[in-house]
Length: 258
Image 1 (spheres, rainbow, N blue to C red):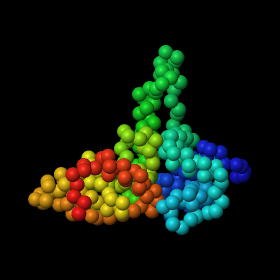
Image 2: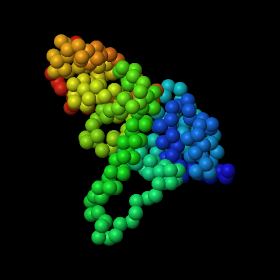
Image 3: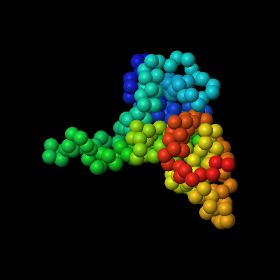
Image 4: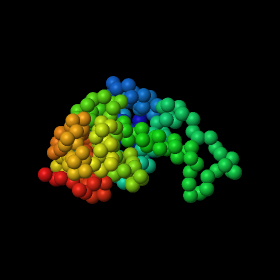
């Protein structure tokens, strides 16, 4: 296959692979790597290497990977940190068009086109689905498809929970470091501010919740996790700024910190 400079869209596909494949599966024999390599006319080893390069930019990876990260790789990583939603949407859109062969949205008649300050509802829905899909896959892969508190390993019962809520920060909607893999019970408690995490990622329960569960045997799974340390992912660890936001703005403050 001919060698040529990596263009932005190809880098997006490599970043997508890094986010959505377990690190041990980022190799030239992986079918997903081969699929991308075939589509962009590169060798599987080159695609795997490019995806692995992003590991050296991820602060959660202790063993730094390859040293030949390009300036454009770094620029894409910085852009992903600044606006994960835009980058994730672009990566998913390009993947759908190039590999899934999904047809682009049809051109609208002038009278049907949205006003300059907004998008049609259908376009919004497509973009929301793309961003949600990217976020969920990236978070679950980072946590090994396990609940970070209970260890439950059943993807159908694992939710990619936003730390800073979806509605609060549009640019962080697809940021895997703004997510934690939790089972539905813990996700709901976290989302409602009935639990949060301290600076050491240990569970803090709201006194509101504690007053309810202490005499309720069916609520013991909640009561028993007080003080439990979060099982940290192998990449995209929970962002300290996001966790602080949750403690200060989402968590119900009548909490028992003991």
